[in-house]
Length: 552
Image 1: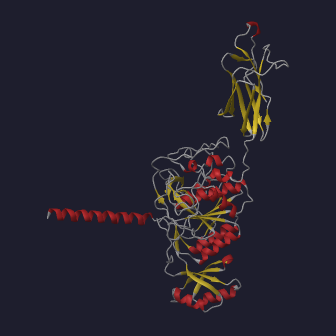
Image 2 (image 1 turned 60 degrees about the horizontal axis):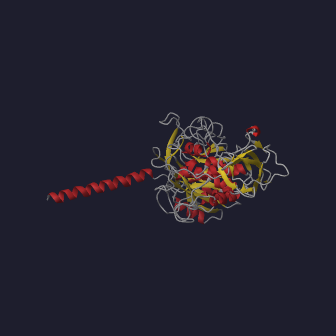
Image 3 (image 1 turned 60 degrees about the vertical axis):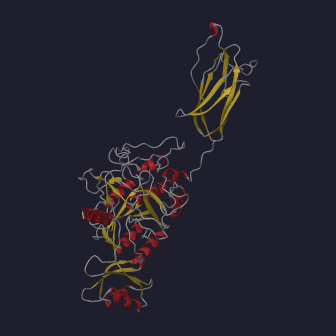
């Protein structure tokens, strides 16, 4: 009996834990689109034919007992609120539409939200990026959180400071944040945020009253070198705030579509959509197609449901779908996956700007999710456009995917797509690559009269001399020993500044300066870096004092 009671308690305990785990996952499910309207009167989306007049449109809306809420002209789509007195369901309205030559489709104006997961800072090992030899050194900034690897780790993973050698952005490049708005007065965003629009309150003040949009804006373009907080991926680019989500981070597909169209019409080059849902809607497909037709790249979060179900708008063909990784380049466990994932970026425990300046981190916070991964990709697209403004959206997609660091299974896979973004490789892809075809060389001669001048009757040195070539940052590039015919050569050098040093071995001394500083152009050869040498034993009266260095 005791054994039975103990077993029963254990099963109750296990079931309770399972329930709590399920409940916790429900709370952290970050992005979901439902099929319900926001109020008691259902809101629908009616797509009309391109040739339908305003009079015909309004007559149909009156016929179904509706009220025009918003006309999305480029998409020929009306958001219509059905009257409570019409007693017509959406299905009945669809039946009426099916009998009309004016209407192409009718669909529910479903809910869409973009709720991130607020977390503490990252734990575990912080990855570091491998550094190439070209460019010679990364760009350094004075933002304290950016330089704190325990707080901000993503820039190191994606080689950002090396990419900044090519560009830190351009204010003329406009990156749209279609989200919950942006706090334009945040000290780390001040001066980066353009005038936008609020589709929730239908006004010109897209102020963030949730925090999601401000966090995303900071990942993209937080100010660099202002001595506070962190720095965005493209810190000199401009942010266009488009508010489509309310204080609870909830909105409608109609507002999202309207926000996409607004961003396109107001100069956005790239659009960030850290929102979405499992239902595919005609109005969003049309809005994405509108952006694509205007050459605007749309980047969207893949969703945080740990599912391989299609997630929209990320799964649409003209959208760059972004999954999320951790600080050790492993997959973030809640990230969605599937054959529709294009690329991945850091999304776990990302520290960025927050709309509330009086919170625990004084205007910053940690959030996790594919919502945080997508803006890393948008910022990289901004850098690529700043480097070369003539690039198309197809160019951006190709460069981002081709330069990604492969993770997981070799090649493209369902968890990481093409791999984790690498900013430095992306900006290097179409930069003319320097060629290692420059050379330096010279002769070591035996200075018979120890005067430091190579005279006609003096022959090549028979002493052992070590020639070392160093880069401008004192890294040894090559070393050769001259011990026979006196000639020396060092090739396969890039263009740049080098130090060439000679050091006598055994029983010899140099009778000339021991070092040259030379500047090489690509494919240039300098073969007159000559040194004189003599036996170590020589008359005291012939000893001389020489300068330590020659410049060329």
